[in-house]
Length: 80
Image 1 (tube, helix red, strand yellow):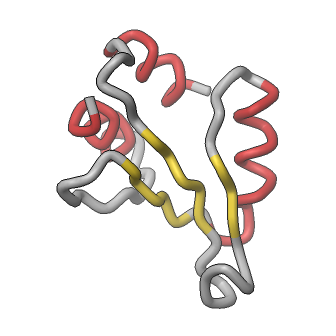
Image 2 (spheres, rainbow, N blue to C red):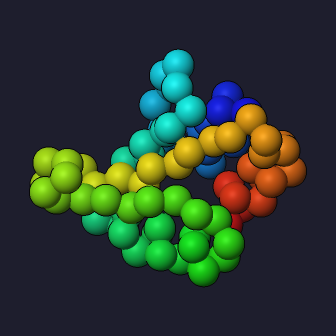
């Protein structure tokens, strides 16, 4: 499922590194915290974090993927 998510994000030019893990940080810069708040309003739980957790200017949205998610659920999250 993580690969499906990363493929969908890449298709939208949303940066998310490929790594052998199911937690993907998407570097969203200054909009990370606002993006995570808006996604939560749409029923997508992600975590936004910025400075001092990460260096200034590299705020990100943490996306966790579960094997229990379906492609349709991931597509809905990406659409949000």
